[in-house]
Amino acid sequence: MATATQMANKKKIFITGANGLLGQKLVSQLVEKGDFQIFASGKGECRLPGEGFKYVSLEITNASEVEKTLAEIKPDIIIHGAAMTHVDQCELNQEACYDSNVNATAYLVKAAEAAKAHFIFVSTDFIFSGEEGPLDENAEAAPVNYYGETKLEAEQSVIASKTKWAIVRTVLVFGIAHDLSRSNIVLWVKSSLEAGKEIQVVDDQFRTPTLAEDLATGCILIAEYEAEGIFNISGPDFLTPYEMANITADYFGLNKNLIKRADSTTFTQPAKRPLKTGFVIKKAREQLGFEPKSFRTAIGILAKQIILARS
Ligand SMILES: NC(=O)C1=CN([C@@H]2O[C@H](COP(=O)(O)OP(=O)(O)OC[C@H]3O[C@@H](n4cnc5c(N)ncnc54)[C@H](OP(=O)(O)O)[C@@H]3O)[C@@H](O)[C@H]2O)C=CC1
Ligand SMILES: Cc1cn([C@H]2C[C@H](O)[C@@H](COP(=O)(O)OP(=O)(O)O[C@H]3O[C@@H](C)C(=O)[C@@H](O)[C@H]3O)O2)c(=O)[nH]c1=O
Image 1 (cartoon, helix red, strand yellow):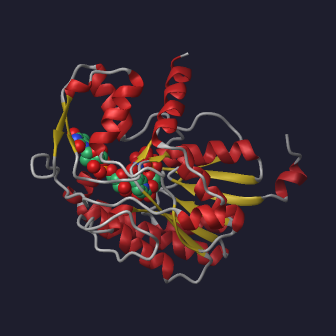
Image 2 (image 1 turned 90 degrees about the vertical axis):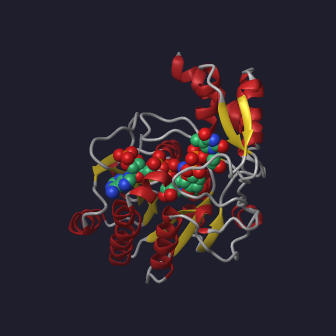
């Protein structure tokens, strides 16, 4: 255990969205590493297991609360992952989405400038049109849903900031964590098939699905390297949800006959999804040594965590 003096000499890292899927993985990896004083912030009560961090309840849409909290802590690094991430809810409740995804990011950027903090913003493939993929960091953004519009506008406020910044773009994050506000594709496929439920899964959308642990590792590499600019941090495999569902069913020995092939004309959601995204991760591999797990290996990691969580 670090002494008070040792702890006081460590850089302070402030995580938003700490109760969420990425947030929980970030905090657990940072605690494991022991290199930072960790401030984990979330909406309301702490839902994070374990210790080794200070939890800060913070409603990031409250400008004065953000300013006051960050002025007190004066972090050296902020990893901003908090967002309204339910894409269909964002389409249907655009005011709340704008507040959480755009206004809150602007408040945090301002606080980062005051603290002279390295601001690391987590963004998405949904800023792109889906006309083509996989995409590198220079691709032109053209969102096709409101969530994507808000994340692009948030990126622009980060890029215009006067503090050191990095943008981490990722894709279709999956994993298991405590008390999550939403599910993700692997858990949804697994639980549907285990319940004997037939599912319609699209085969004309393309993604590079990302294990939440790998996304957290990528964000931490950027913090450690004090890297600046835009980085694609995603899984290495370019797959359709239909392929992901079949790989998941194969791994867990579930009934693949329940997986019915669909496409975006037959399977529609309130918010349009970009058809072809997915990321080229060459820059992160070369500059950060980022090396994500294959989708199959990632599912194996998830399976072990599920067994551990049950024991
Ligand atoms: N999941 C994915 O497939 C992808 C995610 N991303 C991006 O990665 C980041 C992390 O995503 P992920 O971990 O999956 O998302 P989660 O929804 O699991 O976590 C987001 C967290 O942000 C918190 N939050 C939302 N609004 C506020 C607010 N107003 N004040 C305080 N906290 C708030 C949520 O709180 P609560 O839990 O209480 O609701 C939640 O814990 C997001 O920025 C997302 O846009 C990018 C590409 C893909
Ligand atoms: C629920 C469902 C999804 N799908 C497909 C559509 C989509 O391509 C994929 C995932 O669908 P979901 O609606 O669960 O996830 P979705 O909202 O598309 O996930 C997005 O989340 C936000 C936060 C992001 O930033 C994006 O990168 C992306 O990961 O699975 C089906 O084919 N059938 C279904 O019944």
